[in-house]
Each structure stands twice: as structure tokens, then as C-alpha cells.
Image (cartoon, rainbow, N blue to C red; front, side, top):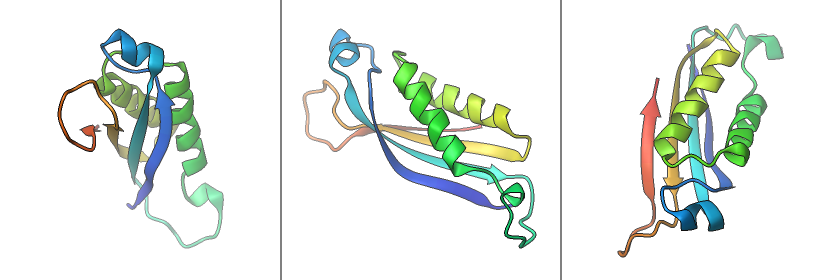
Length: 116
């Protein structure tokens, strides 16, 4: 077993409870970790691994077409869709950060982490 990670992907999304978040949108950062169920044999062949390009495209498409209220819902959808793509996936972990939220205060971001 080994892991595939894509770190700090950046997207513009329209996710949030407040109307302003749906209209104006906000910047999102996403980290993805895929735990595989198999061991790499050492052969230099794509069939020996999983396509991180496909994972990126799944996330980009979900964000483009989603206007959910909760980033937890988005994380759940990402995990579900990725796990459905290949039976060689043991676990998917997603971290989603919203970089600007309508909270009066000083902080870098809000983040959720989900694994299934």
C-alpha cells in the first residue's frame, strides 16, 4: 500500500450558507490524499498506479458545478466520487480551506478535514 497526494490545489467556488458566498464566491484550497490497496511492483506502467490527473479533474468539475452550503458536503462528494472510480482505493482524505469567510476576525482560513 502507498499514498498519492495532491497538495494545495486552488479553485474558485461558490460554496457557503450566506448569499454573498454564492454570488461572489471565494477561493478554496484543497489537499487530497489517496491510500491505495496494492503494492507498487516497480514496473514503469500506468496500470501499476492511479491517475492523479483524474483525481484533479474530478475535484475541479465538482467545484465548478456545485453551490452547496457546506464545505463538508463538498468533501463528502469528492470522497464518494473518487472512491467509486477505482477499487484499488482504500481511503480518501480531503482537506478543504476557505480563505475568506464573512467572520469578523483575524485568521488565515477555515478548514475541514474528512476521511473515508
